[in-house]
Amino acid sequence: MKYEPIIGLEVHVQVKTKSKMFCDCPAAYFNNKPNSHVCPVCLGLPGALPVPNKLAVEKCLRLALALNCSINKHSKFDRKNYFYPDLPKGYQISQFDLPFGYEGYFEIGINGDNRRIRVTRVHMEEDTGKSLHEEGKTLLDYNKSGIPLAEIVSEPDFTSTEEVLEFAKRLRQTVRYLDISDANMERGQMRFELNMSLREQGKRGLPDYKVEVKNIGSISVLEKVINFESARQAEILESGKTPTQETRGLKDMTGETVSQRIKEESEDYRYFPEPDIPPLNFSDKQIKKLEESVIELPQAKKDRYVAELGLEPDTAETIISKKARFTWFEKLVKGESNPKLIKELAKWLIGDLSALLKADRSKLADLKFNHTQFKNLISLLLEGKLSGTLAKKVLAIMYKTGRAPEDIVKEEGMEIVSDTAEIKKIARSVINDNKKVAEDVKKNPNAVKFLVGQIMQVTRGKANPNVAEQVLREMLELPV
Ligand code: ZN
Ligand code: MN
Image (tube, rainbow, N blue to C red):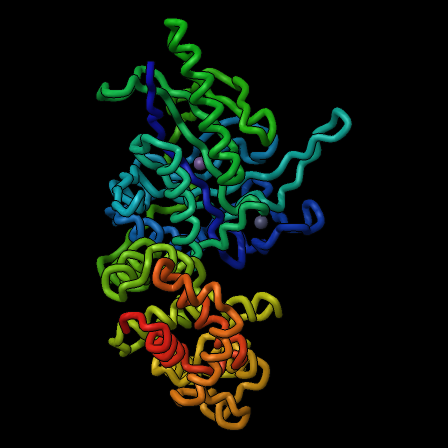
């Protein structure tokens, strides 16, 4: 039997703020001394009163808006009760029936098509502390307790691993774009839970069971879990049984899962309104202002680069992947309408310029030359005043010195040789040195390119390649 996976995701993202969700303890807990960032509120001591962090609430609302959610203008916090040592209050402050955002969607690109994944809700809650298991003992660090979290819940709309991974990557990019979170996975700033079942291919509707897997800390493990669960559930279904509806945890980083508990229902959490925090009300004006701060999102940006600027999807993807890069690129092509120049600029930005920066561990912000100078360099190339090889050399000098490309060309004698007579002389000797290739040109169209390459090599990139090819074609009696 052939099956397809039916998957829904829950994503927890740590919202980037200075202080914690309900107290003024510093939120930067990573690598800090255990229990050094704690107070009565985040330790859950009796009588302590939580006060919501305005910035965290705003960032969560912005995320909900970015995911096309409707906003509950009247919202509140609720207590989610469960007992676990890393939860000092015995409950987590979360949101139950009035999440900040509901019924949204997130668009992802799959094989050149866009697909909408429905977002059930976006709500706000607090993170728990951290348990460290050592030599049969459990140690607790509450520095993480009370860090603001945004939780994104999707509908079970994914039917392939590819879609899940694309969603995860786009979402990570999106929260970074909007400065909602750094989404650093190694630091646990973005975590996944998935619910998954298998459906016979061709059938419709949801299967009558689902398996939840918790605490997935990276996108690569997410992929492994889906593969493992696909095989495990298929085997059970093949034997004529139905997989148990349960919560499973990771055995290790291989993606293998083990049963943890038979799934609890929401009533097990005895949700009730948080009595210590008054309900929140947002005005249309407040929401509109937040909505305006939602900049163009990665997928929309990529689609626009392809449709309007004529970039290849892969090139567009590389440029949008970093905020600094697309910001630099957009300034570079602002007001530019020549599609050939735009494409070439994009190519050189992610190619040679990025390579120079990478080798140097530098950033675009550290460049000694400006956007106009870079554009002038590429224009010289397109006008045939520089060959590719020379342009590379000029760029390297620009990179080191910040001098203007026109000055470098002049002062370093890098002007291209377009003089036909001079190139003819060189072409003659190149043909002489490569008699076999020259005889082959009529059968092998690549032979001309090879000979052009030889001319470029002899002239150290200074011959005009167009003139060189023209001259060669004339001399070898090929159609020009
Ligand atoms: Zn605190
Ligand atoms: Mn949660």
